Image (cartoon, rainbow, N blue to C red; front, side):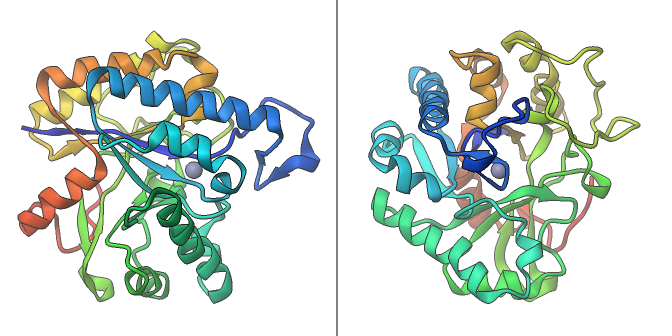
Length: 299
Ligand SMILES: [Zn+2]
């Protein structure tokens, strides 16, 4: 049976539709008190959809948010159903930091330490901001840095050719060719929900997924659900190891305050898939190494 892997890039609101607020933005994200409240409401609605269904999930946190709303995030996410991992400190382009060890230390080590201190659990997974076509293959310096500081799995493959969206159904691989045979890549799939619902981004044509693109931009939970749902049927029918759509609590919340698109996807997925967090996927592959390739194989 295939897994439905629920993973959320838990970052501040990226108000692409607003022209103002520039002075409170960093890397495009807004950190005003109002936007932090909105961010927390998004995380709460997603967590609630999972808790109601007892469905596990991974939340990859931008650590800067723990400085602004640490107790609130802990009260929402500190639950055995939830896997808590890292999405860097400030959401930079990691490959752009390849030669900047101090910046890598801040984004990867300081962020990991802060999340571990806040939640009292080890952090071993990282989602690279934005995602890349080939993940971090070919960047042994960053991989070595990650390995040495205790990371064991990455989600860094998250776009199609030339960093287009959506991301193909790439399957997991070990970074053996780069010299890290026990560091696992768990690629993400399909649309980035923020791009699907209007944030400017480069979309792949012809379609990168084995099902069609929506005829119109979805603006409600049902529409977003329908853009992702064929992946549940496709991955289970083709016996792929897992399906892991790309979602952001702030963007989910902008479309539906109750995270109805997540509720619909979880209800659909549980009919034909096992429900998993990224930690489950990692441990499952650790138990049977051959489930992942020894090198990147693009779908
Ligand atoms: Zn992100």
